[in-house]
Length: 158
Image (cartoon, rainbow, N blue to C red; front, side, top):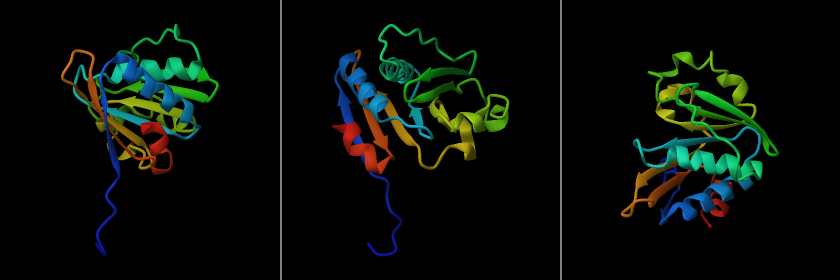
C-alpha cells in the first residue's frame, strides 16, 4: 500500500526439542559478525538462556564451554573466533540507567546477546535481530519469532 510504513518481516519457527533450538543457535553463531546485536525476548523459562548458551558454545566451537548465567554479574564476555561476544542479562535492571557502568557502548563494537532487552529502552539497536521465544506444546519445545537482519534472516531460518 503506498505510503504505508514497511512492516518488519517476521519468521516463526517451531522448535520441537532442544536439538532444534541448538541447531538454530548454531546457524546464528555462523552468521555473527562484529557490530551485531541479538535481542532475546520472552517470559521466564521460555529458553532465552539455553539459546544464548548454545550460541556461545557453537561460536566457540566448544560444546563444553562453561557459560555461566549473567543474571547476577549482568554481563559475561567471551573472546571467540567471530569476535568478542558480550552476553547481557538485564532482568535485574529497572531500565537503561546502569548501561554505562556495564560498558554498553564499548560492547556494541563487538557482538551483543541480550536477554530482557526491554530494559535497554532507547538504547536498543535498531538493526538488531530480535528473537522472541515462547514455550511450545512439549516440555523442551519452543516457538521462536525472528525479526530483523533481512539480508541474513533467510539463512538463519533455513
